[in-house]
Length: 126
Image (cartoon, rainbow, N blue to C red; front, side, top):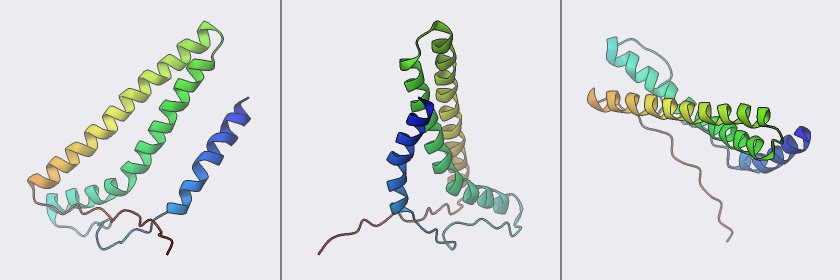
């Protein structure tokens, strides 16, 4: 059963790799070059701007998988375990988004550039 679920998730997610995007290293600062607290915040913001979307996507997948496990659980023990995972998934998403927002607030307060790379371009048939 778990192999079928894993296979269906993999088949559903793999086409998204077509929209993979290269990161312009000039807009995202991931190398710490000194500069005191401002430089450290800029470096941390650059690392988070790359990592946070991936972490949020993984947390959402975990949350949806936990909901699915809750729905298909046949006994109370399985439902209780899935319910705990759902609650921790919500808490985790809240913490991730809160930290991301805090870094954004600190970056705008200290006038640090947090330019994110441009989104993927969608191919157009002509």
